[in-house]
Amino acid sequence: MDLQSLPSELLLQIFHSLPTVSSALALSQTSHRLHALFKGPQHLSILFSAISTEYSPIGPALQLATYNGTHTTPSAQKPPLSQPLLTSLLHYGRTASRWAALYPAYHWCSEASSSRRLLSPSEAHSVRRGIYRIWLYTQAFHTPSHPRTSRRNPPVVRTRAVLLRPWPVSELAELLDVRELMRRVIAKHVCPPDSKVRKHLLLRDPGADLTVYPPATLGGRAKSHGVPLCLRDAYHSQCLGIGNQRVSARGVEDGWGDELTQYYAVQDMLKLDPQRVLWLAGEGWMGRSECREWIEEELGEWFENNGETIGETLEFVLDQRGMEWVEVCELKEAVEAGELGCVHG
Image (cartoon, rainbow, N blue to C red; front, side, top):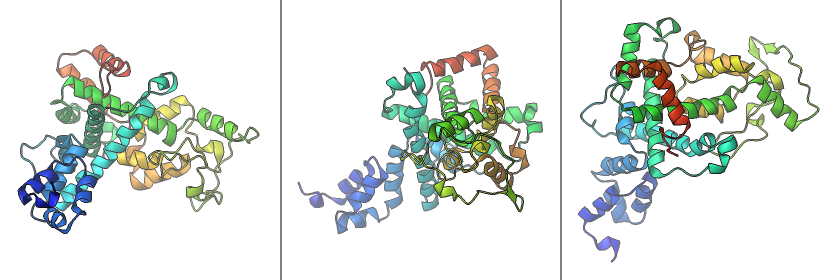
């Protein structure tokens, strides 16, 4: 049967059942009639249906896209559809899907790499949900209005707990799983320790000079020694804009210290939203000195020495449910063992 012979009501139903935004756009380009239907009064509804399917779950994504700086509890009513709302949902959904695509490489690594596989649709759904929720938490509580001095104040902790309290333990485990994914990406690509940078330099050039020299400065900023940022990565990966561990012309100076110093740097960086982490790990990569300058200029003094607070808030929420702190450790172990989290087994 010719698609063109179907009534408009059935064609619109077909549009609403398409699984991706790209498929809806492709169908709209097949004829003048289908293009007119797509651009008609149900244009926003068609796109919302495609976004809801491709970047599910749409509930947490809507909560993130409509966050206004005051309310972190989900609204019972769906907001009116608009082009800015759909643009925001598309942005958040594409970022969450990039994290879902990265998940296998960082979940099944080292000894477990032989078990690596693609995620099932339900597993990718869980990763996206975790990304949406971490992003919302970051927008709400990893801000200049939450400095280090207030992180353990009981009223502040209770305010943070309001966001996590409605979620069941299985979805809190997804949050821990996604946070670990972000931590591994940051530790490898954004804040590598000195030992990893030295190892990378020796692999690239066995005769490399590993002496740490004082950073040269020019007008208060570190020089890049004439090497453009876009050319510093000689081993850039084609996978989602994430490169292999990189060093600039300054070499060892790009390391973030020993393992303990690097640990605290990673804790600070976990306050970044998922989009910024991907940017720093990919096209926005910069050395240690440049990154610290970027933090000071873009984020402010509150950011440094002020680690993320999701772990503390989670402990508080589980304690309110009658669970002891040791059971929080068991929750983390269950995520590591694949018993809970985004992927089981």
